[in-house]
Image 1: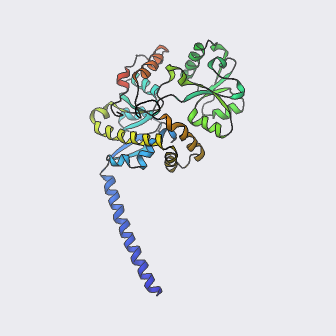
Image 2: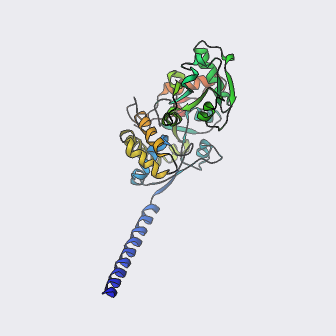
Image 3: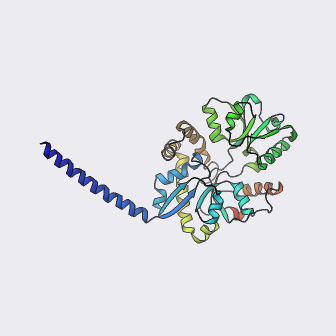
Length: 330
C-alpha cells in the first residue's frame, strides 16, 4: 500500500513539475514578447509611487505590452538618465525639470502625481509658528540650498516679516523631526503626507505653513517625466505607459487600503502603519480638483518659472508649453 502511495505521489509530482515547467516557459515567452521599459524613482519607494506599483501588480503595464522595471535613482540625476536615453521614464519635480530645460536638457513632464504641493514648513506646536511672520527669532534647519533661503525670504516678505531675524542652519540628512525634538531647530521643510503623518503617529503635534497656500509655490511635486526623443520617436510606448499609469493612480485614488497593501508587498521594508496612514492622506490628492489624474495647468508652470527667473535661479524664462504636456493623460 505504501509502495502504491509512493508511486501515485511520484506521478503527481512529475505531472506538477511538468505543468509548472510549461507554465514557467509560457510566462518567460510572454515576458520576452513585452517591450522593456525602465522607470527611475526620485527616492526610495513611498506613497507618491503607489499608482506605479498598482499598475505593475494589476498587470496594466503587461496588458499594454510593456515589461516595466522600477528602479531607484543612481548617482546620476533622474533627468540626466532620461536625457541620455538610459531610462525611458522617471519621477522628479517641476523645479528640477525647469532647471534641466534651462540647461538645455530635452525633458518633458507628462503627468503631475499630485495636483497641489503637499510640502510645508512644519514646527512643533509649542514653537508658536502659525505663519511666515512667526519665522522671526526662530531657527530653520535644511539642506543648505539657496532655494530654501529664497523661499523663506519671499514668504516672510509677503507676510511683512523681517528676514534678517530668522536663523538658517544646515542639518543635511538629519531627520528634521529628531532635530526639532532635540531643540536644534524650530522648523523644517517637510512633506505633510509622509514626515507629517509619521509625526502624528508618534504623537508629535505639528503646526504647518503650507507652501501650497501661496499660488507661486503651489507647483507640481512630484511629476512623471520623459524625454522629447521618447515623445517624438516612441510615442506609442509613452501612450501605453501612461495609459497604465493613469489606471494605476485612479485605482489608488479610489482604493487607498488595497493600494497601500500593494505598495508594502513591493517595498516590505517600509513601516506598514505609516504607509497605510500616508495612503489615506494622499489618495484623494492624486486627482483632487482636476478632471482626471495627471493633468497639469499652464499657469502653475508659468508662475513658478517666472519666480525662479526673477530670483536668478534660471538664466532664461523657460517656455512652459515645451516643459509639460497633457497629451498622455486626457
